[in-house]
Length: 186
Image 1 (cartoon, rainbow, N blue to C red):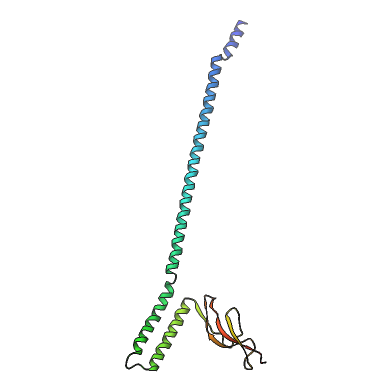
Image 2: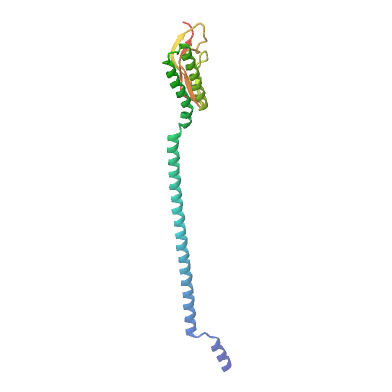
C-alpha cells in the first residue's frame, strides 16, 4: 500500500500549485477583461470619429446648399436678362432714330413693331406666354372679370373685350387677363 499511497500523493496537487493555478486563471480573466475594455474604448473612439465626420459632412452639405440657393437667387434671372438685352438695344436704337431729321412715323412704327416681336420672342424663350382671351369662354383661373356687359352679339359668359392681356410662366398664371364678360341681354 505504500506504493499506492505514494502514487496518490503524487497525483494530488500540492496546495501551492492549486493557488498558483487559480492566480493564473484570475490573471488570465483580468487580461481578457482588460483586452475587452480596450476593444470597447477603441470602438467608442471609432464611433465618435464617424459621428464627427458625419456632422462635418452635414455642415458641408448645408453650406453648399446655401451657396447654391444664393447663387440661384443672384443669377436665376440671367437667362431673362440675356434675352432682354437685345430688346433694350433695339429700344435705344429706336430712340436715337426718332430724333434723326430723316425719321418718319412709318419708320418709327416699323421699328417698334420689330422690337415688340423681339420682346415676344424673348418672353417665349424663357417660358412666358400671353393670355389674350378675346371671344373665348370666361375662365376664372386665367381671366379677371372687370365688368359684365349685356350683349346680343356674343355668347353669355364669353369675353367681349380685353383691357389688359394676361401672362403665364411655364403654364402658371403670372397675371390674369382683365376682361369684360358678356351677359345675356336684359
